[in-house]
Length: 110
Image 1 (tube, rainbow, N blue to C red):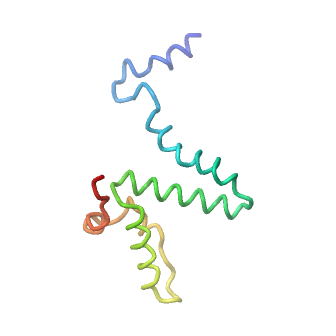
Image 2: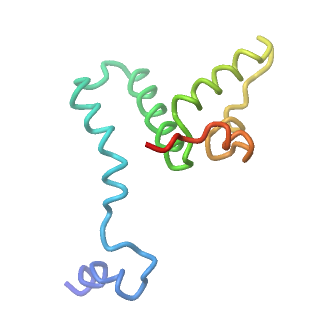
Image 3: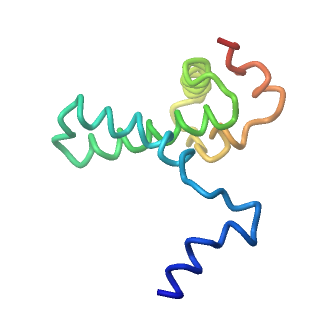
């Protein structure tokens, strides 16, 4: 009982720890709704694609980048590459973009 209570009251002594996980639950909501609406993926490839797209879109949102602008920019970067060039996706991820590029891809206020 004491170990459970200690975990439940951890946020009292550490104010930087939130007392709920609403942010995480809100981030998972589109994934769960998609799973319900699409009736699941029927292949491993489809699951991997969905997982990657949800991850990229959420990374864009966390970095205040418009997912539509980002994906358009990303595909344009892929088109510019020569067929023999290997695309280094790590350098094109939303959280690793240069500030100038991020400024061009910023989400519009609602």
